[in-house]
Image (tube, rainbow, N blue to C red; front, side):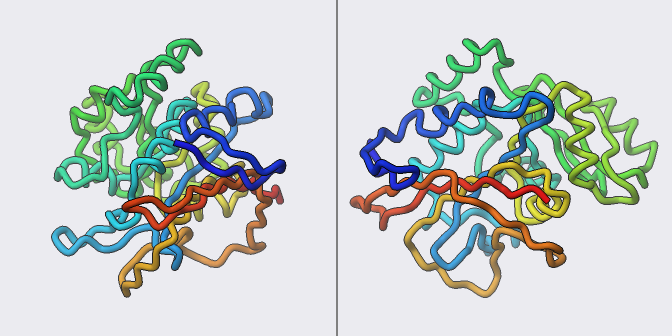
Amino acid sequence: MTLMKLFPTPVETVPLERLYLNHNLRAVRDPSRPFVYTNFIASLDGRIALECPRTGTAVVPEEIANARDWRLFEELAAQADVLLTTGRYVRQLARGDAQAILPLSEGAAYQDLRDWRQAQGLAAQPAVVVLSASLDIPIMEPLMGRHDRVYIATGSDVDAAQVRAIEARGARVIVAGQGRRVRGQALIEALRGEGLNLIYSTAGPKVLATLLSDRVLDRLYLTQVHRVLGSESYDTLVEGQRLYPPADVQLHSLYYDAPGEASPGQLFASYAVTPL
């Protein structure tokens, strides 16, 4: 499985496997502060999720989800100290309609990534942080059983009884913002205090807006599938209030995945977020 590397030059053919693992985020980050990154897959018309007719929740469309992109998603997860997700994901997991249990996958195709973590002296699975304003989170065994550390991040306006109930089930609640909302800077500082410095957001457009509004995001990975989906009910990259100032990014890498028997082709891009 090969790709065409378009940027940085020179243009050349490169293997898919280890593509993002070779970005070596643990080595390139500034040791004085955490490194925060995220990853999305989108259609050509910017859809990252469509409403599921059965559940009414937003899910990655099967028309763009693909194994080659998922391999790179897993490579990014393999490097992380902690994964960010949302209460919505945990509720989907509880219902059985989540896209997948949070990485790393236990499939044979990803054994090299599990071996890589072990060679780095890392835990078998990254820690998990669930962002939630309501604390309406059904902590499920698939999540608690796979990850040594599970945190719930919420705002300061939190019900003490809910906190006790969650912590009795094995998770830890951290306050990372005023009121009910989690704030980007407060969240990253709280995770840094826990020794979690390589932070991978697997969450959606609201969390991306939170990270960008405080400019705590360092890198955005984006797969763009060459397929137009349409739909009136969809998610795009960022949801929420307009960003002031807007977030600028600089192209860090770009790879072309040519069309195949069941694929229209796609681009794998990464962008460095310009600090304020």
